[in-house]
Image 1 (cartoon, helix red, strand yellow):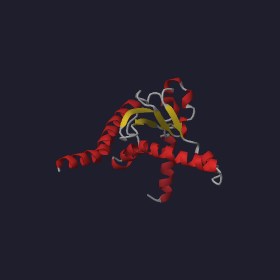
Image 2: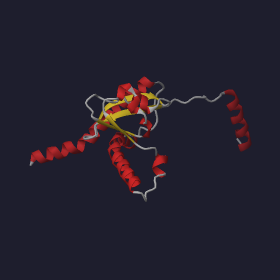
Image 3: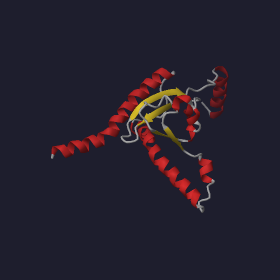
Image 4: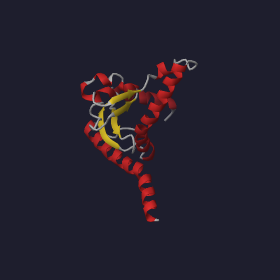
Length: 175
């Protein structure tokens, strides 16, 4: 088949079989313990659900302090998430606009770096799932099946994250 024939064939196919106009996407919202780095809450929602709406559901009730990225702006106004003291990141655009020659801007930048170091604990389970388990796309149609897969993946990620401290604890007790 020549290239010209192939192009005409593909054009005819496109006319007969229209492509789907929608894609299925989802977000995984997780709650992570700041000391151990283990995931304690997993919520799967549609991709168009904002992060701040799930903030109250990510709390297990014993938190005194909670950290969030810029997607959690305004969380202190929500009734279900009022209990802990929230530390929400500054928007990246406003952070870039800081004039680092002033003392106040330098203090704000240091505060943002400290917040980011705590929030990095939340990103580590995502790193394990995406890079070690190679889970980068949703596999199924429907939230229920994908959320069930997320529960098992984050459970396994907890085992991977807890492996090193448990092995060092075991090595200390064996000698």
